[in-house]
Image (cartoon, rainbow, N blue to C red; front, side, top):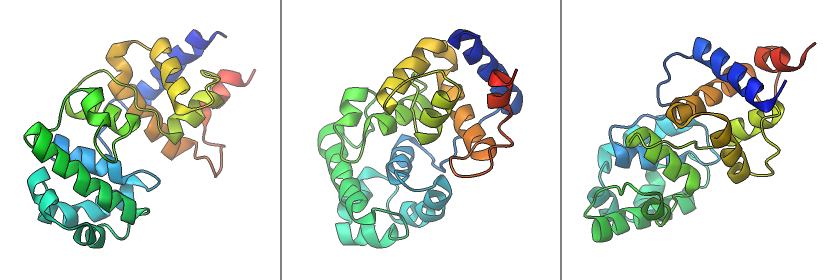
Length: 206
């Protein structure tokens, strides 16, 4: 079976499992989505969703976030890993949005990746989920499953993202990356029973 054939089976099976895919992080606009994604690095979405209501009740716009001190932000997100550096980044991100972008989240990868705490993956999520721009954000679930399904030999998420974009059409990227994440969480966790992982079995068991 070729990579393209495996990729087709993966897409078909994921579409059956997850015809609708909600964005896992609670948010109300592009800014709150970007903050939630920045907070989710090395932390579960579930934990982020537990913390952001309190944060957004106080600071759901760049102007309000910029007015808080780093200590105040840290107190609001202290249950999340790396809260110290994330608090600094959120303040700096908000200040730049206010000063340089008129408090509006920019709609280019270049401008987003210049913001504190926003790497390529976060920018990709914002571009795809907030603005509908075709992107394929690769997290650890996607990187691991793409290797497991022998759809990439990527040594890092950048190479895996490139391979994913070459295997699937642009019009499915925004939905498919979420479908793979949901599948990884439900059927094929990195540390856990792989018995439920029927897609891997389907691809490789004779």
